[in-house]
Image (cartoon, rainbow, N blue to C red; front, side):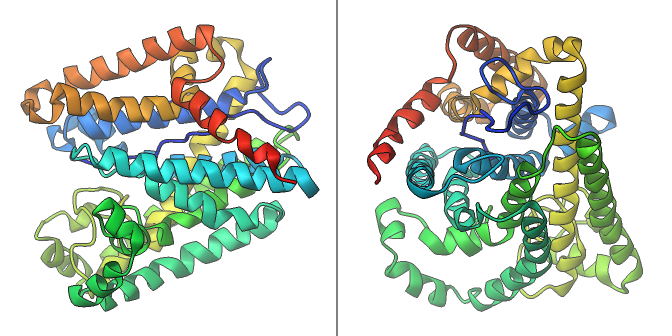
Length: 407
């Protein structure tokens, strides 16, 4: 069972009058995108397996991995909000913003390991999510075009770097030697930084392009006519390039599909240009794996395709909530979930652990997913009707208050 990343930060926007901004200063479309990602995460965690086939199977397949990419991209957008939008904060205000981000990151990392300790089947991304904030923070002053170039370069280079590093650490004695001196590994009984950067389900080496791409979008003047349409078109082009490029490579490179099938012990290589059926890279040193675009494959094709989908969803949500009051009203349950996403994310993992959902038969998957989704929306609506932030969002906000003391 997989985990897709939870966005934790508020969506208040510093731009003058961006599209679809509520009276409280929240960018409604951003919360809607988060809410959709939460529901996608629920589908991946408690919903039916894609093997059920038909339209339901297709939806469940689409929910594999892509919500994680959307969350990471939205994290980049959030990072720019926290550090100043449309212009980055400078001087004391800038130092305080950096301090708030670093405090949030530390809390997310700690909370992530606390959730891992619950011992569910979910690959919790919070620790990697917090580390991504730290790694991307030095870039917050850059312009949109520069960030876009860096994101593209990272998507092209970092997956190959990860591939080579994983070959080097395939010898467990080398990795264990590093882990032995890692204080994070000792204090959390985990693989520590080696796991966060390289061997984990969400290595930050290949998830960094998502957050940088989100920062680039946040730097744009989204209230400018045609800006969101161009973001959507860019997303569509990236999706076609990523998934289409993988499809062509798998069909044109001799022996590619056979090598992927042999490495994964499946017969799913023909659909590895978009499907998660082949899983993650099972072994190091399989060059054909670099041709797939499976959502959790950590390849260039995967990053391009997933980034494209994330941009399409974000732009569509922003456009729809800006142009139609009816859409805003109809989508309010999902938007409410997105506005308290950290609480929803942590809450659903605790609920899975307490209710023993993982032990239920496959026939119960669809009813369980529906119950989880409905409960999340109803609870979020009730809470946001009274409060501005979710419970954990309030605690996270309070924890960052000491940053105001920074001179």
